[in-house]
Length: 103
Picture 1: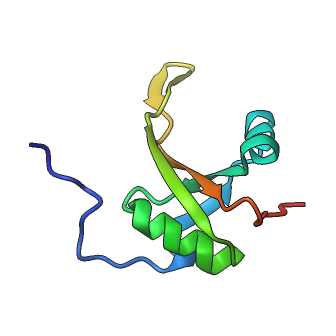
Picture 2: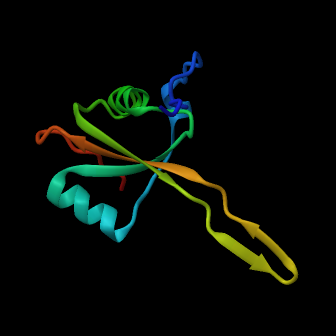
């Protein structure tokens, strides 16, 4: 069984868990239809950390949290090869009577 990297003794503060909201066409569609919002979160954060951070920062009730680990994409610049950094995406579904306004 693989070791879960999110189970650490490190406790993150809410402002350390959420880096930024992902405001895209797809994300806005999900926010309007399903009341689900996407965030870029810390690689060390787990579902419970994300739930606690969103509830504290935005003062809403969270129903569910889904997390995706996104791999970095390969990039080339002249004669060098590199890659963008890997990151973690969290999709947070809120209670129907709660909303988050980014604008």
